[in-house]
Image (cartoon, rainbow, N blue to C red; front, side, top):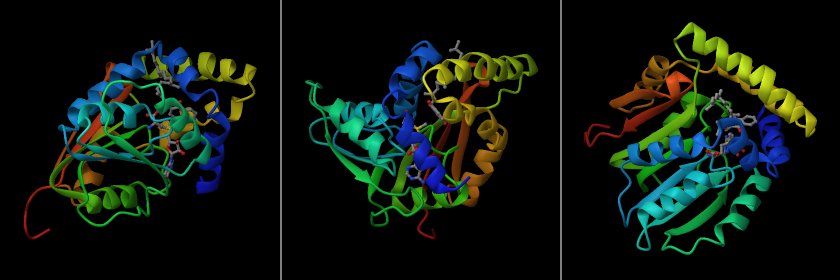
Length: 237
Ligand SMILES: C/C(=C\Cc1cc(O)c2ccccc2c1O)CCC[C@H](C)CCC[C@H](C)CCCC(C)C
Ligand SMILES: C[S@@+](CC[C@H](N)C(=O)[O-])C[C@H]1O[C@@H](n2cnc3c(N)ncnc32)[C@H](O)[C@@H]1O
């Protein structure tokens, strides 16, 4: 799928994206995102990156974790998702790290090598048009020793759960989205899952991108998963 088509999908659904995620996942996506933040090993005061930030869920959680002394760079190439994210940021009262909202392509990040202490990527890896390049770019901008947590949907290994996931998406998610005029955008999810590398394949891709430490943790029965990668301190890299 071309970059422009992906951009158009997420620009179009920006007004309903958060509400639909809450509705379709019964609010569970917020738990899955908090798990990704924990796996990122982000610490107060650090400089963090949230790739494919969309409406800002993970960027805001990362900003809470990094605190007043930290800072977040939240990157997305959808101007409408970023606009929505910046409007949401205002009501937060507890001490947040400063969030820098950056409209850019995850495949060509406008940051120097070894910039970030930690990173998150929520439901982005499956949507970039070049997964190996995205992982290589992530590796480039992380500091040695930094960890990234990459949350996404996955096909479960269990055949019954696979069938449930396909049925849920085709028979509940898409018809509901269709009633709001977003059939095409949500009908994209199931085929995108068919193309998405399995957890083991994601680990292999991460290793090929230079991450010497990579693990994949299935969650929600394997319908979701978190790829956790760490850039080793090896001076040869
Ligand atoms: C937050 C979630 C998905 C984000 C998301 C990712 C995409 O790639 C999209 C592509 C096109 C349109 C929208 C999105 C998008 O919103 C995960 C939750 C939302 C999912 C749409 C629903 C997935 C439901 C699970 C398959 C089953 C959940 C079972 C339930 C907890 C009982
Ligand atoms: C499913 S949304 C995820 C949003 C948010 N991370 C979350 O957890 O809800 C995927 C986001 O990735 C963005 N995206 C896809 N490919 C991208 C790329 N190459 N560069 C930057 N953003 C990209 C889309 O614009 C969209 O906002």
